[in-house]
Each structure stands twice: as structure tokens, then as C-alpha cells.
Length: 277
Image (tube, one colour):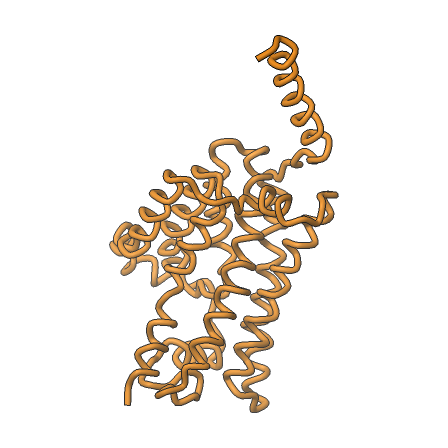
């Protein structure tokens, strides 16, 4: 190789790095106070939808299936849209490579896959860390849920061959529809917002402990489920573990996969109902 060739290689790399630095806006920090808004506003929307709109719709005769789509689907769709809009507001190019880089959606490394498997395994045993506190913390009530919401949850998780008033035997479309809604709106909506967009900016402000802020506020985001203090505490091991793995691997895919596994109870219930009879 000629001397001029070897000298030009570092220069070309420096030039590419310079162009990338110019075209990639620096991440602005999100501190703890700002994080309260980034988590609190979606939480307020969900709480109003689930504890307010949901009972109102059921009292007026709306079918539970329609209620699910409106009161859960719409806020999740808004969260997914917020992640897209926030990305564009950072003045980044609307290209798939740039979006994947910003949202940390690159192909996971071997290490990231190992952390993902560990996270999925932890999702089955993590509750043991807090079960001992159940008898005491369950007595500390944070609010009394509307009767309509309690009944809706029983229909949602109750099983028995029915799902929100739909007889499941042979109804494969219910599982397909729910999986599209679960992964397309619930998982992607939350993970692109919490871990793809917010966590990297929290890392700028909070450094190595950003996952603690992210995971704790993600558990608090579910206030509409936390009728008792134990509900919040019981959720913390899973939310903290997922945020830790996302930060440790610097990749959003472990969170997407782990979140899907954590929310796998209903798809399994649907599959059993479809195969029954």
C-alpha cells in the first residue's frame, strides 16, 4: 500500500465521523423533575381514560370489546405517535437507519441477547422479591376503583372460554387481533417512548442511575392499576429490571421482548379458549 493511501484512510474516517456528528443532534438531558412530566402526562391520560371513560362507556351499554379498543387502544396509540413526533422534533432525518439508531433498535449483540434471556427468566420469579410484603401493603389503599373497572378486569383476565363477552372456541381472529394490538400499540407504544426516546436522554442527566428513575416512574405510570400500595411495590422488580437491561445493553429490543413476555398471560388464556370445545 502506498504511503498516501494509508494516510488517507484515517482522514476519511475522521471526515465520516465529522459528518455524522454534524447530522446527529446531541441528546438533551431529561432530569428527574422533567421525567415526572414525561411519565406523568401519559399516566394522567390513561388514568382518565380507564377510570373515567371506561366506566362511563360501560354504563351506557358499550360492548366490553369496544371499550377495550377505546380506553386502552387510543392512549397507547397516542403514546406511539408521541414517540414519532418527539423524534422528528429533534430535527433528525426521517429515515429508517437514523430512526433505528436514535431509538436503539439495532440488531442486539450476543451480550444483549443474554441479558434479554435473563430478563425473561426474571419476569417469572421476580415477584418473589415482594410477595412477603403483600399482607401489609395490601391494607394500604390508594384509591377505590370504580365497580365497572373491577368487573371489566374480571372479564379481561377471567378466562373460562370467554374474552370480553366473546366466546373463544375456534375464534382465531381474537388472538390475532389482540396480538396486533398488544405488540403494535402496547409494547411498541410504551417501549419506543419509555426506553427508545426517554431513557437515552435520562442517561445524559442521571448517568449510570437513569434506569432507577426510568423503572420507578414506569411503575408509577400504572397508577390506574395501583389501588393498593402493594400493587405498586409488586410491579417494581419487573420495571426496574427491564429498565436496567435496556440501559445496560443500550438496546431497546430486550425491553420489547421482555415486555411482551411479561404481558403474555392474556394471549396464553386466549389460545387455551380458542383450542377448547
